[in-house]
Image (cartoon, rainbow, N blue to C red; front, side, top):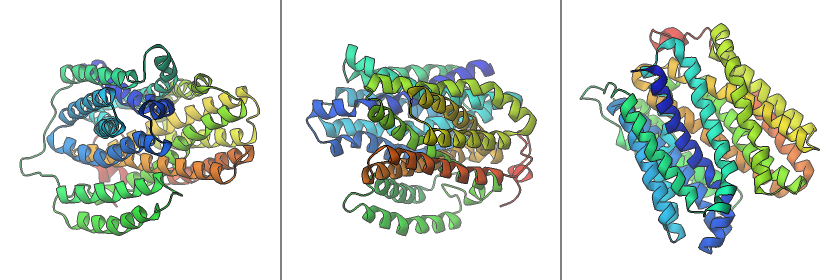
Length: 450
């Protein structure tokens, strides 16, 4: 197997998911008009995808550890393609939402790609591979946001699903041809389906409560999640073969990195909502201009790649995580103080994109290198869920502030909140043990005991 070719296959798989994730967002208003429905109903095109991805990602990560990550990656890409095709052909909202639920199974693509990097690539090339996959994720998301407008103008809204369906199907080919099957777990290894059902239930209720924050009855799902989460936690501690090994999550590196990821997601995903709204309102910009303003996020990711490689080689991924969080936090402070011109906003987004790219590349490296090889899939998946939950919180809080206190000052308040979240993430990053070695040895030897 050629490492470069294998990495190319993983990048194509990541591109398929990132484009699918972002391409639909700018067209929600279009779907509302075409399907003759309400804004709250149309929002389920996002909510259903988010819930499905968050619930299925840990389960698919664990299945990857047991049955082979390559096999589960192929299954996830297949589900993405079929789900996107279903949404493209749908004539009503329920069928389109059902397709989005199936597409959400692709949420496991990103953590599975990170786990496959550790499984198949030599240790010296892993830091570069981690940052490349993270960059592809960011650039693909930006590309989806930017190209949505031209696709709607030149083709139709259904191509927002048909294009990701084709890309997902094409991504299966290099995964099959370029990646070896990988090792499967022993025959007596099984998945904890009871624990999976409990996790899916309380996590789904939590995300549903966050997405409906402020709406009538939003607290009932939160109460349900609060009751079921301790039941799941206790069951995982007692299970012979738990879905999520809590001892692995308690490793100092994993624990601190997941906490940093939660707060980092709070700031990153929230900014994707708030900054476009700021640009549209303050500068009276249309969807195309808003999409172009967000391009520097991807540019910042690309520019930081060389810095990440040098910093990781000298100081390790812990230093890259802390530096990335600090850079992004400073960018938020600068945006909060100065956003009077588009040039200021673009510069702030450029710096923020560089910091976020640096931090998330380090997050993936820290988690998959800190755990035993048989736990990489589910551990990376849990980290992805932490990012999603943090992003949901950031979006909900930001939206609530903008709703309760409309006006330009509310944008400053939200950006300062995101900067504060990243300050908390920096405190968590500093608690990651050092040194962190990225080759050989058991997890305990690198990170310390729980």
